[in-house]
Amino acid sequence: MNLSNYFWFFKSALTPRFCDEVIKYALEKKETMAITGGYGRERNLNKKPLNRDEVFDLKRKRNSDLVWMNDTWIYKEIHPYVHQANKNAGWNFEWDRSESCQFTKYKLNQYYDWHSDSWPNPYQKEGPENGKIRKLSMTCQLTDGSEYSGGELEFDFRDYDPPQRDESKHLRKAPEILPKGSIIVFPSFLWHRVKPVTRGVRYSLVVWHLGYPFK
Image (cartoon, rainbow, N blue to C red; front, side, top):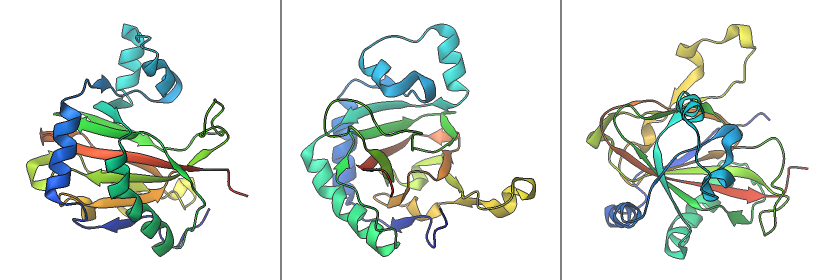
């Protein structure tokens, strides 16, 4: 899908007080190791532990810690920005539900390598998420960029012939969200990554917004 805007951002949109409240609230909860790929979120929710080889394999792709939250006061604060970004960027994707919020902690040397947030097939499970796909992804910056080094959010738009790939031309960093409280929204099928943190801790809030498959 060709896009005129690959992402939309709001600089320092969330108040420092709100960011600090989310951080404090999340740190009071039990965190889990982030999982991805074939291991799936359901396995983590069912508390089935990964074996040593699976952990090693997983951390080649992703190494971070997280807390799941689904509190109304958080959605109430962030949903207006999702609607506004969807309109301003010209996507106008139809969506009607948000997944649980993922509070993510990136400590020293933690990262998340190249990935997209979308899945090959719609969700197949009981409940309101059944039959839907991830359409819009959102990342909220809870810590200011001055509080850590590394941890850059980068995009690879992949709108070129593979033999022509040149990181100096095709990678797009997102420094727009470095100020505390900044928000970035983008289609969930875009490839992106978080580089390793080299100093401090980066806290972020990630939320995916769902709708029925594109027609």
